[in-house]
Image 1: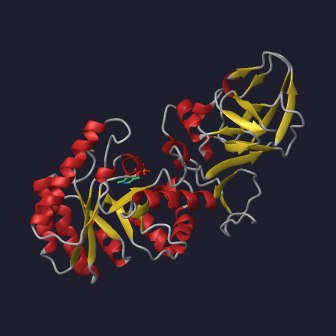
Image 2: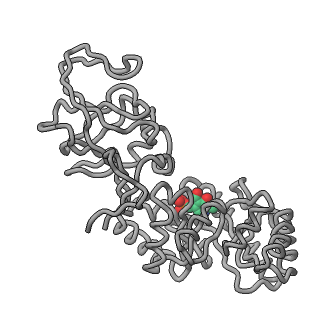
Image 3: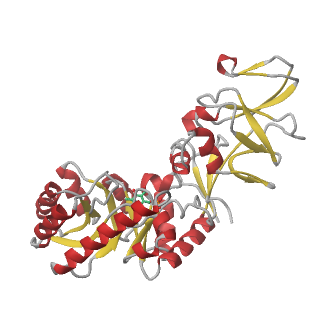
Length: 373
Ligand SMILES: Cc1ncc(COP(=O)(O)O)c(C=O)c1O
């Protein structure tokens, strides 16, 4: 099937991020099966972790691969609506200022209410928007980011549920340590579960309760409730899932150098033998960060080729001495597979001392996203 791009993107520079729709489809099917009978909220914040939120949300909606979408801000939710996405969208961030509630409600986005002040604002905003506000209350169970502790959350519930302009649709929390601390995670889930019980004792009915993101969903069945949210596994950056994004470019310049030749700013690499060096048109302004300097590897001709010297803003040099037939125009894979080799997001994250989430979300807007399959 031919690759498609959004119409405004002219692709003269060969650098691109190729996103496999097939991989996202398979990953979402697996996640839905793991969550079932609970529903799946596909987290597409930060432009779907750099993969393109509108395109992926359209795919998931068209093929019924999830119940709805999670975004971090009203702007991200509006981008989905402008892209024609009709499914439920929950804004996971804490909204400020007041006008953002009005804009969210007008666009039919569900909002998070994480404090008593936000509860009052959302009631006023719903009146102003002339449309019911659909809210999910956020419980603080130990993440220490946004959310109300139980007594405050119960007051929020009382206030919201007394308003004819508001529908209290759900309550959720976020686990901070599902990948590292089972005891702490169980404490968080326990606090959540007791709060569900208190809400039900107050007469709350039909609410959507959700505590888990990918790691919780796949490892703590006891915290399932009736919805789970997932981002990272949908993009294949979790064990057992298929990575969806490949980052590719082509060699634009090639040279043979003598021993002692210097490469990049501050002579950050010096050839210790005669070498063949390729320049590729990708740099830190594309999200190929300077931490990769002299460390990361790029696949060319099916071989791992080391980055030489400092990554510059728009270009990076790599060692192709051992690659037979390397030429201007040869494909270079920064992230993904070529032949039998693979550069993974985890390998790049290890070099940079970070997590895979940061590697993919920092691939900049300058890199066109191309959808295949
Ligand atoms: C509130 C919330 N829910 C869900 C997610 C998705 O997490 P994951 O990508 O680990 O599935 C995030 C991600 O940061 C989040 O902040």
